Image 1: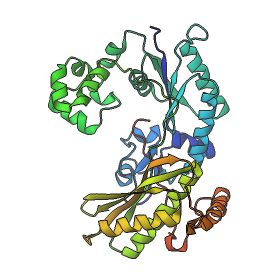
Image 2 (image 1 turned 45 degrees about the horizontal axis):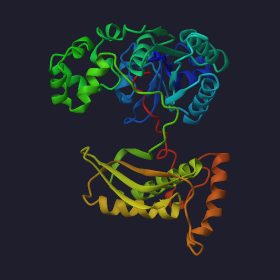
Image 3 (image 1 turned 90 degrees about the horizontal axis):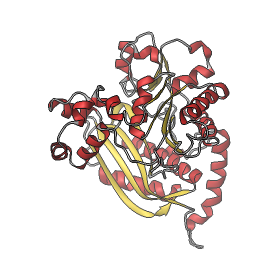
Image 4 (image 1 turned 120 degrees about the vertical axis):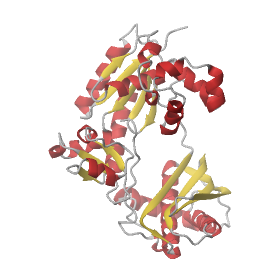
Length: 396
């Protein structure tokens, strides 16, 4: 069987790097991208801020206490998407098999190319092209599987490259803290520490039955990853399973009129996203988080739709059934799942059929002038309410 060659490539501090391309005065300075309110979180941060202990997903308030001189930017997700697409296009135009794992992270299957170019040399050339043509810096790791390559990338960031030779996977991972394994989060790390397991090498030597008893089937995967075993393929396309939007309030609220208006706006934005993707949803979910952090959701199945006039009433109906405690609300959100590729099926006498041209006209305006260029009056939100929610990245 031919030995695999899997490259993991990750853009260094991606959001910050894009901001520095747009404003070179930010180069070398401590920069944080994220929510700017007291309840905002860090979406991304420069390596200068990390020296002070700032990390992605950290509350902004805490980050600024650690690094009070940091420059805080709200961020521009459209710009990040454009740069990500440029990098994606360049990689996919050259590599034989590519999986886009996130907005700034890629896996390349280079198996069989060793005899032509050399996988490591190919990855180096690709990294240099991205830097030269797009201006963004990447790090990469190369090994026989996804897990080891990703750990190798994180081990040498920023601006690094590293190859783990075949047969050395276990020895490479052994001295590292267990949290370096991608699937191990804070809760699992704490459980392992409570068991006296701090390093990956110790985890790799644990009896499989103990890990399975403690973590279920995930215990088997933990043991395999700790031993450098990962047979997952590089998958060139991963179908999106859901779309969601949510808002955390700066001040907890029981203003039902405001809550309904925000739900309408979130639903309208998601419906527009569905139509852009050529999809419909068959399941709608509403999420509420109260001031005491209790979180509740309720969902309903519907005929597949991407129309505001069908989705907004469904969301409002769920909200009326869900919000019965009259407690202060901290967060509210909407999620569409069971996504179907294709257009909504409308009957000839369906009243909604006459709205299709209207949606098309509205979508053209949004495509040209931005998501908020045209809105329903019932769902209108001020700029403070519709601030960007940037995804946090935990291992840049």
